[in-house]
Length: 471
Image (cartoon, rainbow, N blue to C red):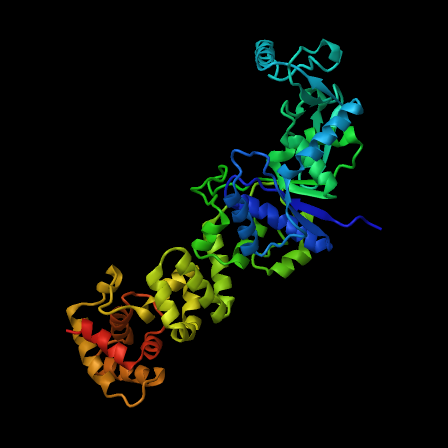
């Protein structure tokens, strides 16, 4: 029977869960769910100076918001330092590693000599075959792995294909520091082995690490997991993704008004594809996902595409769910007036959302569009709306308000009919009446249908707002 698939997502808690890490987590999650396997979470917190509890929590929260669950309890790498040291000492016993007593000054001299001879600046194996009896007194040694002196190390990669590294280009790198703490290379291999990881999916900036890690796997006689090294995300200009391109934490995308299902859909398309499909559900992604469909070329981050996908999911969302997201977002980003307005006018906002949803691409835009419901008189009129309120327009507003006062029925159809009759008697197109009304009632030039707006805010509020702008 085939071994169950086990993937892992292994971020370092030195900051937020950035967008590249989120995509790596998504691919590991999708593959594990596609195969009926497991995705484990490992927090690589061995950098004690830069690792913070706040960053750990940001990673947990970011994954949960994205809807990416993991199996079992998270592994904390630092807590496993004794196990890492145990494996380093096992490699010593097997003759696959050795103590090195070189001082920092000696290592610096080695690097300078190598540079002077036109060689890469690295360790030259000085202690590899020396008798430990020659060790200087009082020096705490490091442990170095014995890299093969010749031949090739092959990485069989689902994305990159067969990648060949010449062994002569690897040095005997450190696996255990002089203070007994493990290096990243050792910790990752031991953890992946002990956690039963069968497939490693990570950024291609780890490809050279793969060759070094295979040396450790071979030294212990362990099976090497299958590997997939995915190209990093680039900005629209082809340069490595930076903050100006969108290399932000996932919480920033939440605060900018993106829905998690939209971000999942968009990130899946950054480096993986299923034909020409652009919009697909998470269930479809899991059903279709395969490592062989991962792209070898670098994906480019495109906010326009992300907005378009987000707009699709906003249109598809249930109003109650959107209302909850709008309220939570307004509170998170400090828009307390909006939060209060949304809370106090829940039923009206829910009734308006089907009209608002097709007009918005982000949750923040939805909040902006809903402001007319709870705006405080006199309304703040933006410049584009102000341009609609000419002297003639204000005169028409005042005249139409008088007609509205006499309406027997306050409904969209009744108001619509009254507006059309009013426009006809004045020799105007309906838009010449409707647009100034929109400006007066919402302070903007974009809103739901203006007659729907009047019904939503009610007769009294409609007449009061029109009165503020009438000539």
